Length: 142
Image (cartoon, rainbow, N blue to C red; front, side):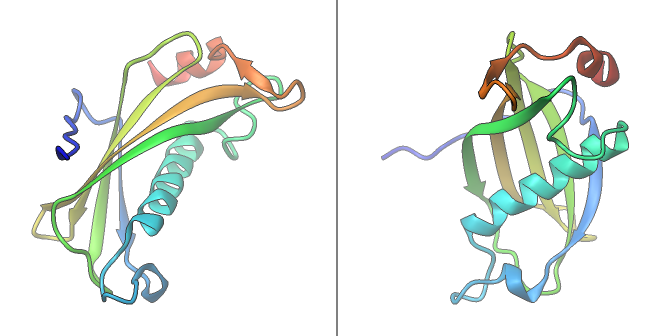
């Protein structure tokens, strides 16, 4: 089976630091994939808050986002008490959503530890269906 390969697109739109908590470490003594998806959620939420949203549930009239897929590539192990820096960028916009790319780097060394991509779509929570990206959201990110 071939390895997943992710390419970080263009210029980062957001960067933030993260500590590694003891609860982020699995029985093998390093961070596992299940935690990485939670990190992506935290990073994404911090970005949404930085552009004026309280959370990801309402970015338009009853419109929020849902994650549709994810790809994770480990480049280096992450251990308890490592400090991390997350870098985020967007790609592949369509009528209903786009991809979010993340690079997780280790502390002051800047070693790339994780590459991650999540696909998101906008979702009308009341109608329970996919929705076009709200214009108000696009104005905030462009």
